[in-house]
Length: 202
Ligand SMILES: C[S@@+](CC[C@H](N)C(=O)[O-])C[C@H]1O[C@@H](n2cnc3c(N)ncnc32)[C@H](O)[C@@H]1O
Image (cartoon, rainbow, N blue to C red; front, side, top):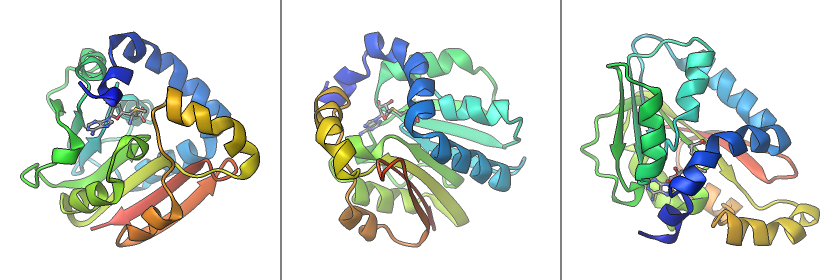
């Protein structure tokens, strides 16, 4: 078990659904609105969704709360404890979860119309490579929606750096890394640059 898997062991996994709305309210309201808009604009009954690092499936809950249709949702995560919570929430036939390390994402995964990846990139050693591999899993005209931690302005950085590093075990995604993403359709920064939203296509 690596340090990220340890971070999302049952103790923390249980608290995740309580912590995340607070985090969203404090720093990520605009990014969440952007995600809701993206989902409303892009989901319909023919759409297959793949989520990378689905955690406790809060994004699927969001889709459900928005009452949006989809054909199939497939969530990948390498924390069994987060997946256990996600699986307990959904029993529909068109929802599936799989234990999968994203750094070993194999290109035999079924292709998707929409890929979601929120608050995961900062945990990955080679985020740009994983995005590039994931893009191969997009169907023609497919889109991937990303929310991630990026380097904030100095007045946030000086107190948030230790929290990011030691509590969240996360690295900021630099502009240099964002520059390595291909077929970028949208880049937005929020909350003094702490939160970034990117849409890339196939
Ligand atoms: C902050 S949570 C985000 C969960 C969900 N995407 C959300 O926005 O609520 C990060 C998730 O990414 C998963 N994760 C981190 N690195 C991973 C990797 N290499 N492979 C698979 N999952 C990973 C963790 O297990 C955790 O569930």
